Figure 1 (tube, helix red, strand yellow):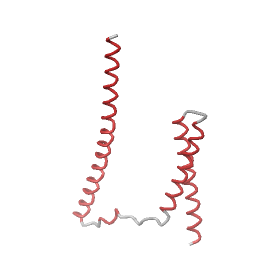
Figure 2 (cartoon, helix red, strand yellow):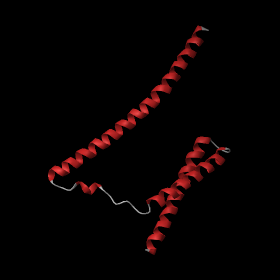
Figure 3 (cartoon, helix red, strand yellow):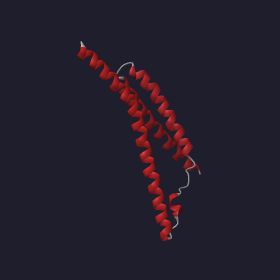
Length: 123
């Protein structure tokens, strides 16, 4: 009986530790990735300026169809969530959601490509 009580207490401690350390670890990893990205970007730009090269090569002109592409992609992802819910009633829930989100997100990107191609030909 004591062993069972100790196991239950240890499992509860483990669950509490998971609930605390997993989000902290996630945000620390996210911060580390962003810090390395921004510090390396700054070092690259400073090195270019030292050599006398214009650092403006990092600036890109925004696509005028970027919002259209993102809008169609997100609409496809939303349809994927709905289809995933419907499919989750039949098969494993996690697999259904991921499969349908990726499928309809991809269909949305292909649709956006075809629409942008047609709009670019009109110009």
